[in-house]
Picture 1 (cartoon, helix red, strand yellow):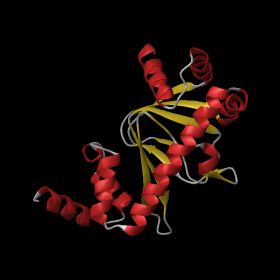
Picture 2 (cartoon, helix red, strand yellow):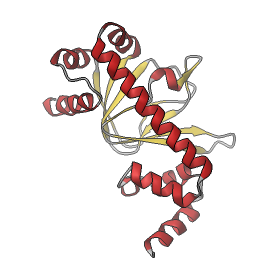
Picture 3 (tube, rainbow, N blue to C red):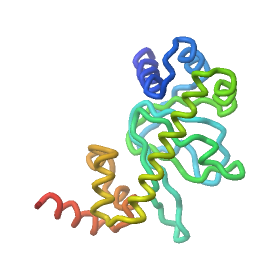
Picture 4 (cartoon, rainbow, N blue to C red):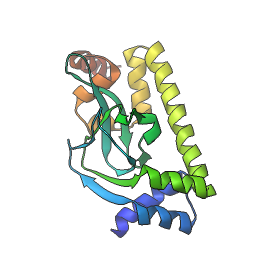
Length: 195
C-alpha cells in the first residue's frame, strides 16, 4: 500500500497538491482500486458520481456509434486525472465508457467530497483549476489537429502525446482513435517505418 500511496502522492504533486494536510485529506477520502485489462470502470449513459486519478496503466475512452461499433475518443496514461465529472456527465449520465487497456490502479473519490475540498481549501481550489486548464488545453489541441490534419499528422500527435502507446494496446483501438481502418493504420505505420 505504501508504494501505491507514493504513486498517488506523486500524481497529486504534479497538479499542485503539495502540503501534507492536502495529501492526507485526499488519501483519507479516496479508495484505491485495481482493475484488470479490459475491465470497464464506468459506462456511457450510466450514472457516475466519482472523480478518478489514474495511478498506473492505460485507459481508453470510447462511445458506441449508431451501428453498434466502438469508437475510441481518448486515452489516459498514468499518472493522470480523468476528465472531471462535470465535463463528462450530462443529465447525470456519463458521456463515454472508460475501459482498462492494461491492468490499472486508480484512486477514486466522491465528487461531493472533492468539490467540498475545492470550496474550502485554497490548495484544492488551485488543484481544480490546474486540472481544468490541462484538460482544456489538451482538448483544444486535439480538436484542432483532428479537424484540420490528415491521418499521418494525427498519428504524429498521438505518438508525441502518448509515447510507446502503440506497444501497449491493440492497433485496432489506435486506428479507431485516428479515424482510419486497421488496414490504413498498418499501411501508415509501414510507410513511416520505411522512411
